[in-house]
Amino acid sequence: TITVDPTARGAAIADTLYGVFFEDINRAADGGLYAELVQNRSFEYDPVDNRSYTGLTSWAPLSGPVEVVDDDQRLNERNRRYLKLGLPAGVVNSGYNSGVNVVEGKRYDFSVWARSEQPATVTASLTDPAGGLLADSLQVQVQGDTWTKYTGSFTARKSTTTGRLAVSGTGTGALRLDMVSLFPHDTYKNRPNGLRADLAEKVAALKPGFVRFPGGCLVNVNSHYGYEAPNWERRRSYQWKDTVGPVEQRATNANFWGYNQSYGLGYYEYFQFAEDIGAMPLPVVPALVTGCGQNRATDDPALLQRHIQDTLDLIEFANGPVTSTWGELRADMGHPEPFKLTHLAVGNEENLPDQYFANFTRFRDAIKARYPQITVLSNSGPDDTGAVFDRLWQLNKQAGVDMVDEHYYNTPDWFLQNNNRYDSYDRNGPKVFLGEYASQGNKLSNALAEAAYMTGLERNADVVKLASYAPLFANQDYVQWQPDMIWLNNHASWGSANYEVQKLFMTNVGDHVVPSTQTSTPSVSAPITGAIGLSTWATSAAYDDVRVTSSTGASLFSDDFSGTDAQWTRAAGRGTWAVSGGRYVQSDAAAQDTLVTAGDVNWHDYDLDVKATKLSG
Ligand code: AHR
Image (tube, rainbow, N blue to C red):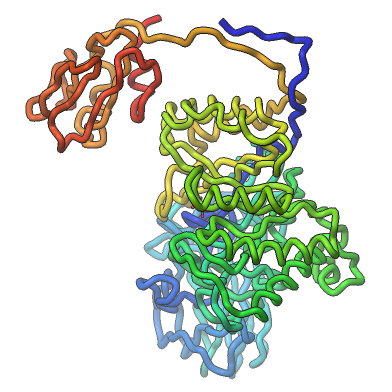
């Protein structure tokens, strides 16, 4: 029985309660949200980014001498390598996944930086893998031996998901090319250097209250380096200044998740995207204490001070007048109005609580002294509990921090059993930013567990001020982490069940909590026997761990994983099952299972969807 008093007023719920967390993981940026179709457009791929890389990754020679060169003829100090063709010669790029997605009737914008010792012609063609033309080719005459940007457009006559961009030069002598680029003309909101429309629209459809970016572990890893790494050095920490200005002048870097990041999607584009979808921008800057398996802190005070100054400069970039240094850059990039930054987080999942907090305090003091209206977020380490978590919460409380970022990835069962997590949080302490959470899967059962948990977040909306599922995107061919909310390949994208739950909650944010009480708990009734989804779960070793709950202790199932029969009989070799002390116990240790106590009506671990199908009533 659920009792609701419609006249009562619980906590107010802010429109910004639910947001998204974008991290460049699973190729969420290059090969994902960032609409660039050419992979390794600036020939900067390097084995340091990923051992499989060369300067020609994703490129193949078509004819003539072709080499990637780093010498004093380079485009600029940050974009150091370029492609040198001994004319006549040519190359072809295969994009991401299966190739370049080309849609009949759509326009594609090509650009290239080029210089040539002798008069030369560059021909660019959109082709299928066999070289068949998908559109009329483009030709540009290269005028002289200084770097110049040349542009043109294709209109596709045919569609394919396996397209190629071929670029060749004719003439004599050496032709130098860099930043070979192809964008769909129809980016999200038609922004130049823009975002893939289907992906941006899926995020926009959530109507998120905020966008946390750019990470995650991406942000602070390697930030402990006690020296000023030159800006072409790989494995620098993520530094916002590397990501702004003209794209051909941005650094590229080794991404924490094992690939090259172009920074084509940089801080300006993040702010613009947040504004375009009506969400509050929430950047995360490195604290110079790393978590995510590194656990090191910088011992370089000058480096720390520079990062603090960089953070002040970031606020100026977002909010400063066009007469300020960084406000002027924002205006030059196309946005004279401020981006209205109000919240900023320092650090992510540090495992060294005292070192982290000492640095955090330095950042916070400097920010508050100059920009007292900015909310500065701290965090509580990588776990939902434990010594680091406890120590960080203690420090955060003592220091009167505005808001503390919590992260946890747990089983659906955990989410169901911890719905009341925030009921007991100190109402006078720091507020909570649940910056990353997910139950471990993309099944309906996971989404339902998250939905149930989110009711607990809302009930505690006076404490929990911001919450975001994580991660947001995964390119199905480059997965470092799952589950994820939105999945994609080079031509399609689809939301998970978890996405639908997030959308349901984000597009229906209430104004305030209406208090309710509940008596009794739902109980499990008799099973329906029969062939239910056996073909999908019969042979998977993952289902060794299926657990079945019962309010009576009666046998609700036998673990038939063998395949085809409609009767749920135990497969041979799966160990011995017995009722013991009110529990179903599997004696086969290799199967790693102990079943739940009779009378426990909570669902456990896997297959809520299958179990739910078994129920009657
Ligand atoms: O969301 C994926 C990763 O999980 C994030 O980078 C990190 O903060 C967390 O450990």
